Length: 251
Image 1 (cartoon, rainbow, N blue to C red):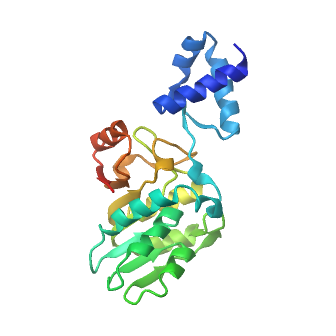
Image 2 (image 1 turned 60 degrees about the vertical axis):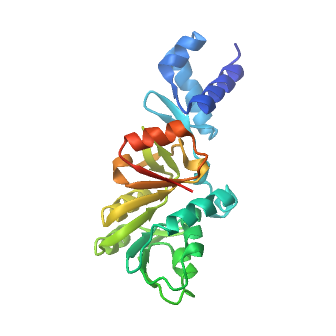
Image 3 (image 1 turned 135 degrees about the horizontal axis):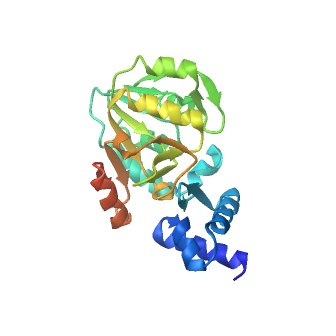
């Protein structure tokens, strides 16, 4: 079998099963695990998958630049954002992470809703400038241009002065075993810090993030309380996430 054929079969198996294991692939294709690891390494370099210990997971498309991500699954993002907005109550302090899905959340906030929004995203803050009854606290720091959010020590210091009711966390991958992941190390640190300052952490998971993984771990699923997904999300995935103790809300 040609290497290109084997790689294509690996990708097909990954798409069908949601993950592949190096040992199982070596037996299936009758090649050494070193050969399989080389295949996975080359596929990862092409952005076709995300290597993890012992195998690989689907690579998240949510790590593309911010402008490109706006056009990925826009209807799904609106659906989960609409459902997420219904989880907010009057008078709460709500942390809103940067991201294209959390940006959609703003469009579903009632005009008479009185809450305080804390964010490290200039875009989220600007999106609420015209809202008549929402107070906005903008966390500062070094601007990470890829995601248009503040990161670094100054951001962490600001976060440590907050006690919030809800944190809407942005992720690029959510997987029952690999947990919550993102494409940048510093962003992962910021997300963990925000989660530690909120009574409840919620992920708005559009389809491209589900069963996918990115290079940097935010934490395992115990870090969050609720995930909001579309109604037609794979039932096996929903069951696996619920077994981890996470509440699943469908649109």
